[in-house]
Length: 166
Image (spheres, rainbow, N blue to C red):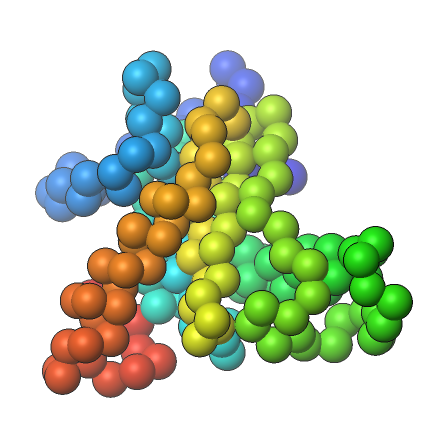
């Protein structure tokens, strides 16, 4: 299954020409073109609050399926990393939901076509930034995005918690 690469025989779907894409998050550029490809923001219940694409050459799934797969991947990876954590003797059961900050966590993983950067806040908000594989550590960028989320979304009296951000 390919998400972010493609051979020469595959064609990419162009973005909507009528709506300009918002600028990519600050600090994600490598100097060689677009670096930030996709941003997801999930709440603790797995509801995707925000989904933005900047540079995604190949779209294989509709956004709803993509979001469900991404949250499932994060749930599984987080559970797996807590079970192989060499610093704790209690491992618990594989697949049991963990509280935010509980267990060992991962920050990123890289493939030959993309790098997934992950940050989970103490309140359970999960931020995922998919970037170019040569992009460096994005924890500071994700913290900056989370601070913007708190400042402009959470503190907004018109925002109903748990609803997608528009």
